[in-house]
Length: 252
Image 1: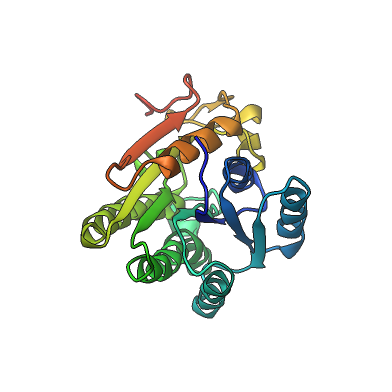
Image 2 (image 1 turned 90 degrees about the vertical axis):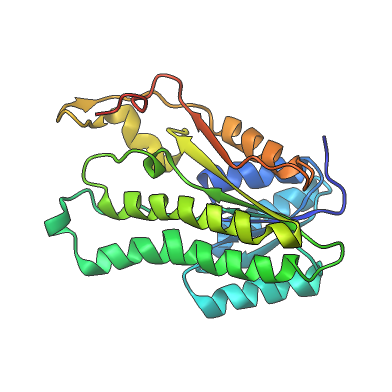
């Protein structure tokens, strides 16, 4: 299935899951707006897309900055006049320390990107989607296995990912009257730079250090594409995609 004349925005598109998903959307006919903090990798992907005859727009943006997000959506309006899919993918972790050792600054840094950034992008997308013609669109939030069960010493990351579940449900409800669908994909151990430590061994709930299996990040891109390609009469509210043997079910 391919998309024609559909526009998608991928945050955190410069690496990892965002990069893989942006490529997959481009391969399937989407015009893709690429955003992230670093301009260089976005430009490289946009150049790659143009060489293949695809349409990409690279706009550097810190999603935690309200003015930056406003400028990003101004660029989308000027270039395309609409947005059909938003993939809220940008995120970060915090220092792996116990709660009493986590600084307020580190807490806020994680909340600013993982929660406030998703709010700002969703807020702007919602406003555009409900007024564009044809009306409506789809918002896909990158949750995490940590939206269900924490890892040791992950209070900031886990708290934000639990919050994303509430945000997803609220947007799904409030978007109904505007034909705006909102769903969440919870990802476990995709093989990216962020997950490299899993292959070296990470703390488990019982205090042990264990190596965890990884899955190909391209499988995540395929899953997001499936969600994006659905008609607005259907929605994947929640999807979990994970390395089959990772310690999640029964974790702890």
